[in-house]
Image 1 (cartoon, helix red, strand yellow):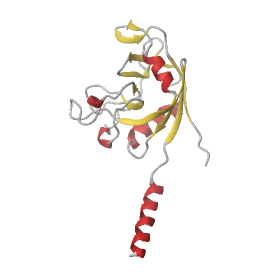
Image 2: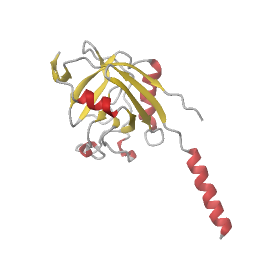
Image 3: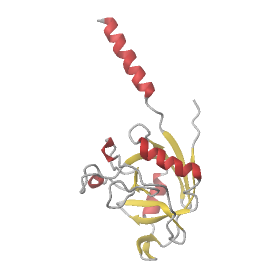
Image 4: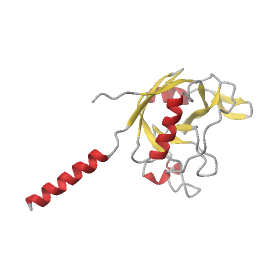
Length: 188
């Protein structure tokens, strides 16, 4: 019995070490910094996609272009002139991963096509269970991480007055710039 228990504990230990460490990134905005922890285990495609854009510097100089208080703040695809930055091919929807659209989580933005996410993301300002798999369209919106520091910055962005600009609604009147998004090196 003791050997079985030890074997089970050893197997559980191996499984735990096989899980990828979360990746941390810092998003420097004109309202302050937001630190994010990205879940590579549950959303590997979405995290790899996001990190590709981070590593390329794609997000530097983009804006939060859609802000709806008590819902979400969206960015990652428009420049200060509200021109869309072209991205890579769309990725597969991973909304079945068990992660939920709760306050402070980051998820991939998409069109009505479930597999259309590219560069844009949103940070949930409140629990948005209606966006969880299976959602209203049978798919949902893929959560791939969460805010670990800077939720006050998210709240400040969400409180920004909005209007219409270049045909887009819910655009902050004050430009909210994403200055940079960079990986945070972890020390072990």
